Length: 184
Image (tube, rainbow, N blue to C red; front, side, top):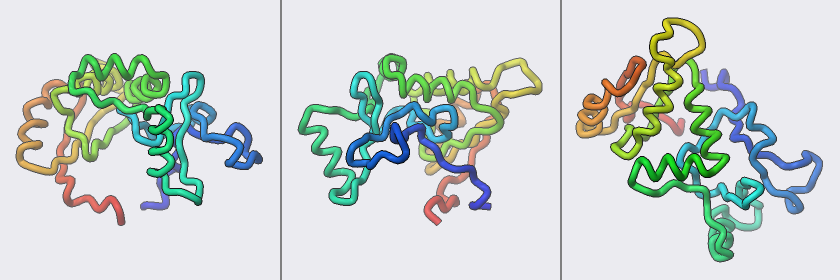
């Protein structure tokens, strides 16, 4: 089953494949049409350089975290949504072209969505809104999101998800996240 997964593409790549990586950066956009990995609230290795969104990479000489620390020392900051207010989160997302692309991609997802390690907290209603756009309420068939599977780690998170299930415009299924062996 594991070998049947499609190639994981985060949208980043070198400008030219024959260019040595020490003279180039991983830029976002070249492979965005095939992108199937999205960091909806950003991630530490992704930086917004104004014109380009770039991804820090492990260069063999230093650890990835060391490279990120050097960027921070140069006052370059990662694309990362860290506010606790949902409206501020959505505002931050919409003002960054990488994050807004991820949000729009979520709102176009088809079939089923699996949420692992994310239980749609109070400040994440914008994510539910994107899911509901993908669900195309009222459409009985066609290219739409039919269901969401949400991994549950505790009774508290189960109660929370049960309390917000009605907010989704598609079928919501819960599963015990502790039974999934992600790293095997």
